[in-house]
Length: 279
Ligand SMILES: NC(=O)c1ccc[n+]([C@@H]2O[C@H](COP(=O)([O-])OP(=O)(O)OC[C@H]3O[C@@H](n4cnc5c(N)ncnc54)[C@H](OP(=O)(O)O)[C@@H]3O)[C@@H](O)[C@H]2O)c1
Image (cartoon, rainbow, N blue to C red; front, side, top):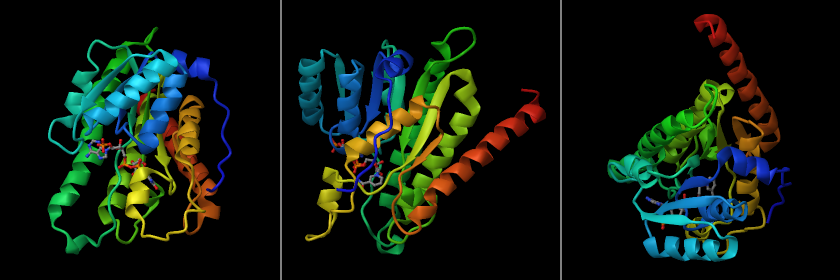
């Protein structure tokens, strides 16, 4: 697999800021499971959401036995109407400080060769459910800080496909562009008020979903370990970054500069808005 240098992560500071509970949407396998494992190892309890209740229960019981955490397992299709509100309701009564919007993959196909229903399902999962869950939980993050500050964090798993258009992934690319812009905007609105947000332009990773999707004989030597990517996402959130682009695909040598340019533009808008609105 392709190597990704792991960023330093102060786990005590992470737990203090984003614990004691986290919600993961799309938690039963792949990057969602990686997030669950690393958060549980920090002692953070988990609301685990995906379609397969039994897989969530198995993971939750394992993490409870290994790390002594609590968990709730919520079977929910993230593309179904009302899914975002169901996530907020599932976290009722818990001191949640972190929301991870994780699930969001799509299959390769040309846009006109499939009816619009699948496209709408992707919009529902990657946009509508994210909006509802982030809004509901974000309001709670605003309330749980001190001295007028909020406290919490939001990680949105997007994709390098969200950095520009891509063939055979029209809806995926479009919804992931929404996810990156949305994360950056939330960062710009709230990072000075104690709530962090980060969008992850994730690279190709060896997840069960990927292994089910790629053709037989596909060369997996250039794919990343998902646990490295999710570790760096957690570290990037705590470091206060709005965006992480993990180098991948054509033109990847320019991607560190793209990341820096997007952040500089965002910071510029934060400052502009201060003069515009008076702070
Ligand atoms: N793998 C890659 O190469 C790659 C590359 C770039 C970006 N990403 C991004 O990274 C994230 C994770 O990707 P992944 O490869 O792990 O695959 P994924 O299919 O996006 O996520 C898998 C997890 O999400 C759950 N899930 C999938 N569809 C769901 C739905 N409709 N409702 C509820 N839960 C659902 C699955 O559990 P259940 O089956 O139990 O529902 C599983 O726990 C995604 O946002 C993806 O776009 C992945």
